[in-house]
Image (cartoon, rainbow, N blue to C red; front, side, top):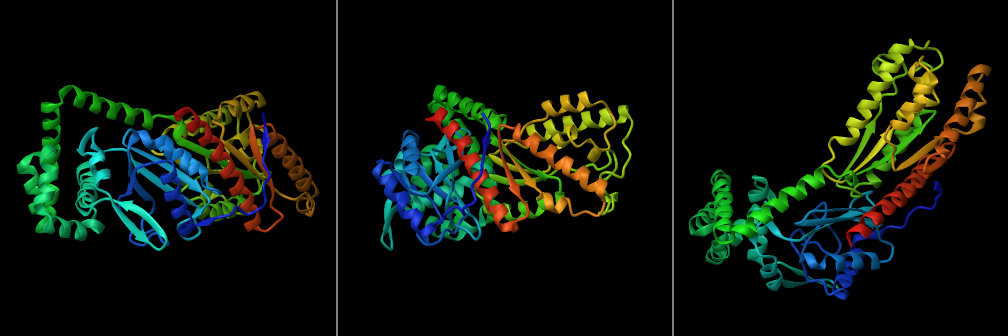
Length: 455
């Protein structure tokens, strides 16, 4: 089924100060036990961090999904989940300048390689209510917050997050005995004491030197006291990481293309800040137009026209077309670790209906075959030049050829499953708004299918 999208109205955006109270009310309604882990000092009016981090029980995740869906005006446009964290990407929230989306990270466990370093239940039982304006939410106790803020980067990543160190040091100094008592069952007395002493004196070299002993102690104590459970937990961790790393669901692709490539860049530049936080990574990929295959685009003067270059021989054309196909699939499969929204500036599918752009001189059946094998984006956005602008050219042949190509572009995109055709004769901001609306619709549809299979 083909979807021709057309939405021109600017999408409404809820201020962060309105969204946050609505989120906490929705979580309370679903009886989800939670606590905000960090960066809540300016709540509810401002978000210090890039996202919002909360801790919940794994069995409350379906309730979180229902709670987010119940908030009016919010659309879930991305989801990525591991056994220890689930991230939702919400469109319709303004938490940063120009951005219209927000990432919510729900930690499901506090673990390293599947082995817990702090029990979730203990943290949630010790939460403290915090009042901010007319909003009340729950945060972790100061000791738990300091331990989590330290170990989340030190134990898991092997590095120290400087922005949290002053507060961690103060808490460890004021509550050293309590911190050691909490760490003792998981790391042993020696490792726990060594870590607390290093943080208290704020010796960064000593703190980083604790990483190896902490990891070894945590692994040995788990394997000693819970051997079967620990082995299964480690196996589950690595199995989940492999599944996430190679899952095709972790990549959403949008192709923005048209006869005039200068329109693409302007639209994408407007879209990029608007789409921040709709995925873990929002990136732009510029496909080399290859006006002459095998010649670097930087060597081609801006005034060069696609109809002036003679086509290459059939062997060279077919060889380079094959290389483009291989490159496309390698790009599609590589760097697919996190949830990524990839916006392509142009597409090599043009080879099948605009071969002159590539100086292609091979058989047409080969371009049709290549076109069918190229990976297809989730959404096609065709930037359509108005016919009157194309006809205004003083060169009759050039105008006729461009009109023919315009029809070829439209015919091609209308055969795709999900597409939108945008008239570039209007202001760039208006075109970008329509493109944004179509992208959000597409991301929401893809995420809905993913969540249905998950919950």
